[in-house]
Length: 338
Image 1 (tube, rainbow, N blue to C red):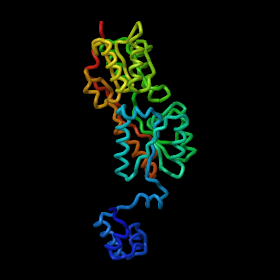
Image 2: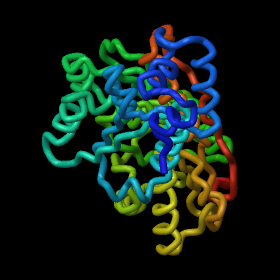
Image 3: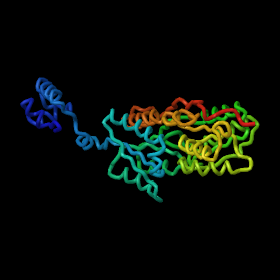
Image 4: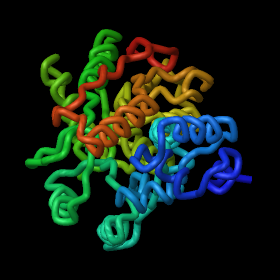
C-alpha cells in the first residue's frame, strides 16, 4: 500500500495540515516539528504523488511521442524499440512518463497532437521523422507545445534539435565499396519526404560523383522488410544490375540479402550489401552484415534530456550534436566480381 500523508501525520503525532506544510517547505510549523515530520516521512518511505504535484504545478509530468508509421514497423525495425527505451529510461529517472501514439490514418497525426495539447495531457513532445516543409512545426507553435526535433528541420524552427549526422556513415559505406572495386553501387533509401531519407540519398550520390561514378541506381522504399525485398528485386532485374547495394536500414538490408541468396546469388561474391543502424541481429546473419552503427538508445536519452531541460528552463536553446555513426565492416561486403 502507498504511504499517505495521514500515515506520516500519525507517525509524527501531528495533523495532516502540518505534514502538508512541512513536506512542501512552507511556513507554519516549527523547525523541530518540521524535522520530525521529514524523518517520519523518510522512515515510512513516503514519496510525493505525481497527480498531486501536477495539480499544484499545472504539469502533467508526461512527454508525448507521435509516430506516423506502419504499426508493424515498430515491432520489426529495431530502431524504434531502442529509441523509445532511451526515452523511457531517462523519463523514469525524472519521474515522468511517455505517452505514445501511433497515427496512420489520414489526419490522425494532427488530431493526435491536438489531443495531447488539449487539457495538458503532456508537457512537451519529441518530433521524429522530420520532413521537408514539416507542417508540425507551425502546429506545435500554435498549440504552444514545447518540442525537441531529431535533427534540424530545413524550415525555421524555434525548437532545439538533437542531431546525429548520417551522411558520414553513408559516405564511408560507399567509399568502402569503391575501394573494393565496385562501380555499380545502388542505394535503397527510405521515403524522400523524410529529411533523413533524402540526406542519405544525397550522401550516396555525392560519394559516387566524387569518384567519377554514376548515381543512377536508386529505389525509394519504406524501411520495411517487404519494401526492401521489392526494391532489391527491381534492381536485380535490370540489364545492368548493381554489384553492391547500400540500404537505408538493417531491416531492408537483411530482407534484400535473403532475397538475393534465394535467387542463387552469393553474398558478397556476386553482390555486396551494407545496412544502417547496426541492429543486434546484424552480426548473426550469414554472412554478418556490414552496417553503420547508429545509437538510437543514446539518441532517445539525449532527446528526452533536452526536452526536460527546456521544460525546467535550464536549456540554453542550442542544438545538441551527437557523434556521427561509424561504419562497421563485416563479411557481407567483398571485392567486386570481375
